Length: 259
Image 1 (tube, rainbow, N blue to C red):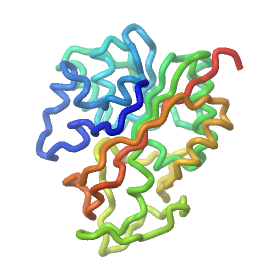
Image 2: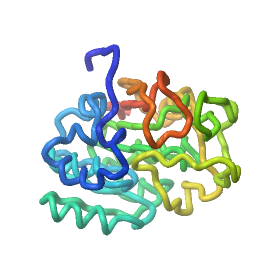
Image 3: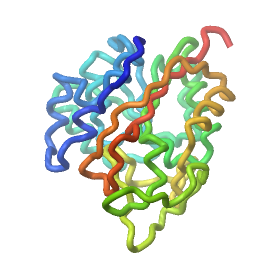
Image 4: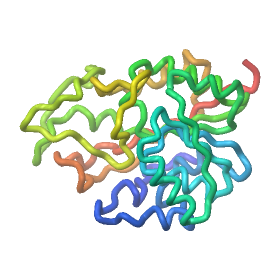
């Protein structure tokens, strides 16, 4: 991937919350849901088996299916799935679904898919190392995982308007889900709402550092093939003014051709 000084976030990420029909448009313009770094890291997806980990709003799933990928949405719960599947029928793309806990992805089978895509998932993952090991197992040799995370630098601030004030250390990985009555919980686009049991915690949010991702990917056997930090604007759904800080962390990691 060519190195660039700046890559913006997608329109889906920065959209007005009242724009509820963007899912109809992603099938003709996948770049509404997948930013330039993600598209280049994913490469040519037509005909490939792609596991989308976490259903979210389904925008990435719809976009990938429209690009010709054989998409399976993998999620520990079927919450919200009906909406995603109805949308797929309306726009004329096919999606499969498997209800599997993230700590048991390997039950899908060794070498089950060629690409895996996970957006805004690891904030609910209690054991990041185990999660990456499970993803490694379901990928074919030379398969790739693409991760999109709300940037760790944006997770440390008090949820209050105005100039940002630090609420917690960058290195404080575990944060109780109950928030201060004077603070609002951050709700970024595609964030999982219903946190199922298993590897995903109901009680805590996990704020993994950039080095955590690199360490656990390496421990799982992955080779990190690329990293990009995307966007720097303040979004209308963000409470503090975080303009100037990177918005998303994008990582591409490959399972080697031979282990």
